[in-house]
Image (cartoon, rainbow, N blue to C red):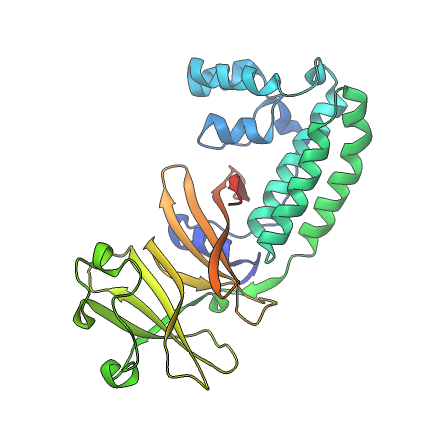
Length: 302
């Protein structure tokens, strides 16, 4: 089955929630009833003009207070203008779908943030009415152009256990950064070494984890240049589940991501290579609405 997304995210939901991949279909009638998300924060993040009665019936007084606090961030009487309220809902919904489904998540996040910052400068409803149409068109056009991948394109970084690691890694200097704290040991025998499915020209790469049965734990990636005997860490994290390779990465070192299941959705974290290290560049939570659309919330850029 073809999956429209840097479609790996829909694959994630297919595995965890048995959700089918769909194209974003914005339904203006949902302005008055909500899109069926599990938290008040997520419903209000998409629709600041959702009726108070809907939020209170689903989420109680705390949800109602969150809605009123959110509305204070927008021009007065905005929600009384149905055209603007609907336009804002459409922008927030489609841009959230785009963020969740693009194969350029870091770039798209910056572009969405720039547009949201411009929108936040509006002091009047008329300003919102002037800016929103172009923003909606941009988001919908980019969402329509998201790449198509197959489920088989979802590739883990980690591959097989490395054969004869003491021989292959004889120039490795231990302990790795954080190893004693994270693995409770600074020895070679406290680590597992894996080959990787990512390729970087002229470099040998190895993924390292503490010996543990836990699915989530410390992770390093080390590299060795063709003209060097020294192994150098290029990534370290105290707590990661599996790392995956973002399809169609446009860089010498591919963009990597991890995912963690939370009560409010799946937290996805992206890592890009720069200044000789992989660094966390973006994180957000993906959830699906009642129609099965993947949407991004709580977007954070370090």
